[in-house]
Length: 420
Ligand code: HAM
Image (tube, rainbow, N blue to C red):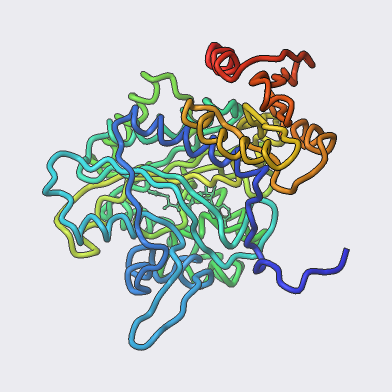
């Protein structure tokens, strides 16, 4: 086949009709389950102001410093959203959503953009679903968020996951820890990787997330943040663990778990799958008690998570889980001759009005080709119509699965179809 002249950009993929079925299945599942948890959907624009993402996610994060898709038009600077927590917070502040009363329990599904080096499980346009609770500092909210996340993977049949949990404390705890971490790393500063050297002053916590070989020995021996938590951070963390145990949600504490955005406080978590290879994080999230104020809103503690949808599908493939149903149609009208085609076209809406899916040939093909096409479309029934059938008012009604036919009136056919 000739090479196409136009293709998608690197790291951006088309989702073709056969695949869309599993996307629709997952999206429906997320919506249904989110409603059960009493969350409401929020939809925000694909583009945001650069300043929001820089402030929200953090200037020194990989996302902002290396991966952002940005452009300007006139005076305005745009970025394609790399994640949805900062945009949801922007929307919350812009529309004073706190005035609706109670905690705002929001969910979203949609595309995100990060200019990363593409590989399996890592794309430049990828999709997330996520939940955010704004307006609660209660560990119950953290645990409901985690419970939802775990629940979705269980529902689709991905059970061999591990939940990593940490608390990175409030700013007071974190300052104490940062100092301890720097004291630990300082004697070996020269041996650290260049990236970690850069992070040393401005964002030492991110050194814990380094993948560089030379950093590993210093990370392993580093002090752990959970020993530096002040009373309020520690009691929050203890409650989260207690409630997870109550719900029998297994977790592993990982005191080196730090996340890729600067907005986190206290709880941080990730759901990992051994079936994913290098990009093993299915989902991640945590608490961000200061972000709403940072973006100009009222003091509003918050917690949330987001999950990569492509990674969920990769895990399904590895485990042999098929999501969604195969393409099919209830009725295919096979027509012979002009009068029958007209009859067919007029009867499609009548079938559809009864809640059935129905189609016919659009190409004026032979009866044999139409029967083949009905098979390819995975049709449950075919109604075969020619001049003779139109005259007699009896149509050939074929059960495609059983390979059985009967001559029936349309009333009888409808009765038959609706009894199924
Ligand atoms: P995140 O860990 O950056 O968190 O992303 C969440 C999930 O999105 C990851 O675990 C991964 O499954 C998926 N993901 C991220 N980048 C890519 C990529 N390039 N290609 C494919 N999948 C990817 C956040 O985005 C936070 N906003 C989560 C959050 C919500 N925290 C609090 N509320």
